[in-house]
Length: 233
Image (tube, rainbow, N blue to C red; front, side, top):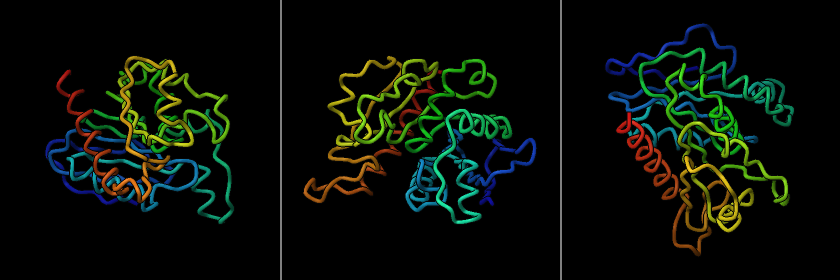
């Protein structure tokens, strides 16, 4: 399934058929191709991701999103499966990268678990160089499981070979601002915290801000991050 539009001088083509659900949405005069992976519980067509894609389009970013295999199986039989283990998720993301060719700079990204997979790939410099991947964006990085702050997932953010933008709610249950300030991560990582935001960046009503505002600001931050990378190239 795809909603393809003509884009000036930047054709994005699948090299071989891709056997998992994916959707490529292109915009004119795109600044980059963002490959975006969903989180553990909601697939690529969830309204949360749909909203993000629309915002990314408004910032001149083409977007390729996809489902991990367990999510496609869940959609087929309706059974709620847990995510595949990390090696299988990583291999799936690699296959998506390998199967699409473009002369645009590529940013690998994802929501929560999807961002963790993208950050894991960023430790593989030969892979990044071979596919013109310039950076990573993590929307709500899962620094640890809920209520298990001792089980840290810092390695991808310590070993990254690319710049990483982390967009995080201040009170995220999988890594709050207070917790993260004590973590040791690579200087390549940029952190942006959203006032009173949870794991989805959603603030409480009393904050005076809205999820829509935070989403818009998050995507504006993505575009600024990408502009910085493009200007450095």
